[in-house]
Image 1 (cartoon, rainbow, N blue to C red):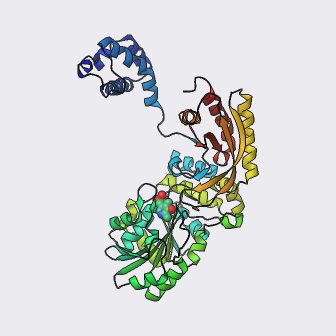
Image 2 (cartoon, rainbow, N blue to C red):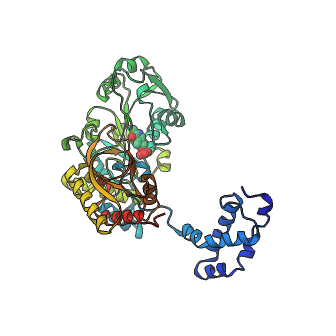
Image 3 (cartoon, helix red, strand yellow):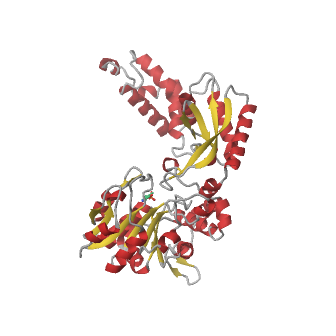
Length: 467
Ligand SMILES: *Cc1c(COP(=O)(O)O)cnc(C)c1O
């Protein structure tokens, strides 16, 4: 911290506004932008971030030397495109599913003017916004009825709040999971007003455990996908089919939070472990809930599919108004679902599918292209193409690893952590990984048209003035 008496000599905003440097900045930027930057700089001086300075002249010089950079930082778009070189396809921190070109175009079209969002153009009267996705969702899932809300957390919350408020919901102790930072089954349950009844143990829960816990206060049996971990060893769980049989005998519906929500049968492409929504429903649960922006590859949304007698009350409930999806989401979701009309087309056009289904040879070819480009730029980097493994991410297919190709980059003078940080702070930012002392870029999650930008970013990070 600077000495308090030195802070007394900090210049005022008014006095800084009289300097030639600030006057020059005012000729290029709006006054509010310049004053905002000055205030932030003075604030960081007060907090000691700038280090101690003595005289007013020294403080003034310090603030003025940083003004242009501070204005630029203030005007940069805060939410930016990032090149994902982690190999994690559904990366929650990097925005999960990139949208298909068709979905982007649909968003633009719906956003640039007015639309028939809630208007039946044939009949000339009001209609419902979910009609734009309803039929396609019914076709894709085989469900009797569907509903769409803001995200899967909202979908689970809505089911509990509407179908189980004040009553009991039975869940296995092995499925009381936390997904992402703030989605915890016990917390969602408490917030919804449903009463959690835990059965079984962390590693083993049997159908009989559920049966014993059923009372006349039981509203639902809940099954939750263990999205981000696997239980191995001495384990046992009741399948959705077994739970549905128990529920059917007592007229208690089963709700399954499936999490990732595949519409594409990955098992056929030799990626195991994730049933489609249709397959999950065929096991017998009354309701399945999934995310729109995980394996489905669309926008953030929560999709509820199942029996009409249970889905209809959800649709009509006032909470649905608070959790409803906006027109941009609907446009992107409708366009994405349309691609699923033809599975082969979806496998090519939906980026999440394309990335997961790309074989190692295709990824390797992209890695080789990157290496060639960076070498042409004449950097001191030593580059090699290595085998590696990518993971689906986003709480999908925990434990599944897909063979991939990575570019390993070693700089003779810059340590790997510093190289990684330079890439992350570059433009566009690139997120890679340092493993076993080397920076590695997994090319599975890098799009073909991102290779030139990635090559330029690597060359810039490897240059002497890269920081
Ligand atoms: C991802 C996930 C959620 C949360 O879904 P959001 O769409 O992020 O709200 C809930 N449950 C499971 C099992 C998940 O995998």
